[in-house]
Length: 212
Image 1 (cartoon, rainbow, N blue to C red):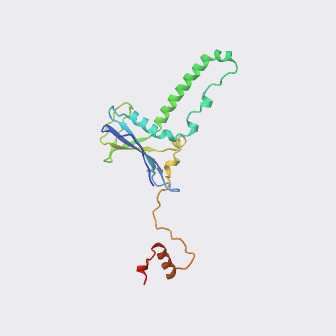
Image 2 (tube, one colour):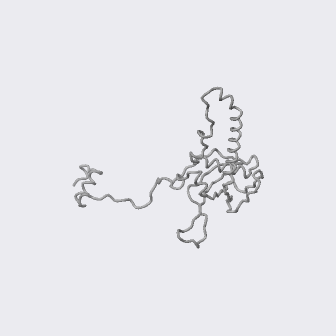
Image 3 (cartoon, helix red, strand yellow):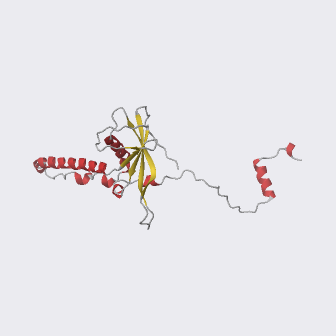
C-alpha cells in the first residue's frame, strides 16, 4: 500500500506530529486475555511551529484539525434545526428579536461546550523518536518540551469517537501493487516447436544472410 502526504515546507522550528490511532485488541471468546491497544489504520501527519510555546491545547487542536475531515455529517451541527424558524409575518419577527438573541447565546454556549467535550474525549499519548513517553500536563496552557523533531501521537479510539468520526477510508487503503508470482495465461493450443519458431520469427525476422 502507498500513502502520500502533502505538508507545507518545514523549518528548523517545526515539529512533525504523526497521529496513530489505537484500538483495543482482544481475541473473540477469550475473556481472560488482557486487552491490548494496537495501532491500526493509516497515520495522519501535521506540523506544529515551535516559535511560540507548544502546549497541550495546541496539540489537541492539531489532532482535532486532522480528524475534522472525517467528521460525520450528522455531527457537523444541524443547521436546519439550530436556526430559528422565520415567522411569516414581519411584525412577529420584530417582536421576537429579544428571544432570538437569547436563543443565539444559548446556541453559542452549547457549541463551545460541545467542542470542550470533544477535546476531553481524546486520550493522547506522546512518544518521541527515542521511544520515550512525553508527559502531558493537566493544564492545556502549560508548555511542553519536545526533545525531537518528530513526535508520535497515539490516540486511543473509542466507540464514542466512532460515532463522531468515520475513518473507514483509513482502515484499508486501495491496493496499488500486489506482490506474488505472475499469473500464467492458459494456453488454448498445446506448446510445440513449430509454434515457438513462428513466435520467434514474428518478433525477430530473419534477413536473407541469416538463412541457410
